[in-house]
Length: 196
Image 1 (tube, helix red, strand yellow):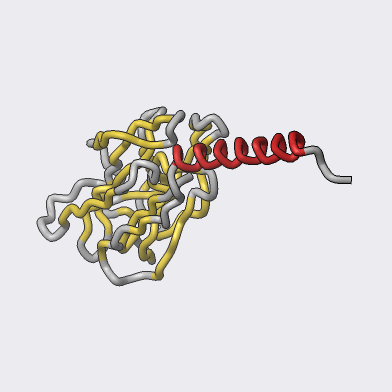
Image 2 (tube, rainbow, N blue to C red):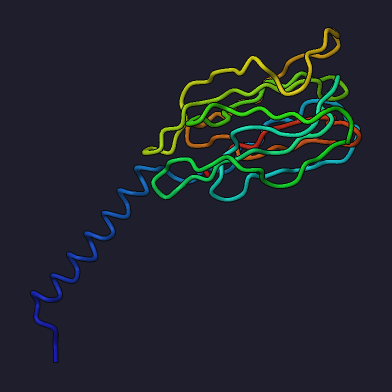
C-alpha cells in the first residue's frame, strides 16, 4: 500500500528540520580548521619531541625543571566540558628534557587558556612566558592576550638569547601542545594550536 501524501510530506519536513538544525549548529561553530603548528625556535641539539594535551583538552600551563636554562618541560591542561566550561588543571603527557635545575610550574589564571608563548632562545631555551587568553565557554573561543611576567625558567642577562613569540592565530584554536627538541636541556620549542 502506498503512504498517504500527508505522511510522506510530514517525514520530508521532519528531515528538513533536522538537516537545517544540524547545519545551523555546524555553521555557528564553524568548520574545523587544521591544527596550527608555529615554527620551532632554538637550537638543533637533542631529539625531536611532540607533546599533546589530548582530545578535548586545552593548554593552561607548563611544568618541569629550570635552572639557568629550561631543563625539562611538560604540560598542564584543562578538560573542556560538554557545556564549554573548563575542568580542573591536570598534568598531561610526559615531560621531556634533562634532570638538572629545580621543579617549576606556571599556569594561566582560572578561566584562561594559553594563546601564545614568548620564548627566549639561542642554542637552547632560557625562558618561556605564557600569553593567556580569556576563555568563552559558550562560544568555545579565547580573546585577549595577557602576558604572565613571571616566566618559566630564569631570566638571563646574556644578549645571545632573544625572544621569539609563538601566537595562536584563530580564536577557536587555543594552544593544545608543544613541539621541539630536547636532550639535557630543552633545545627548541614550538606551539600547536587547535580546537579542543
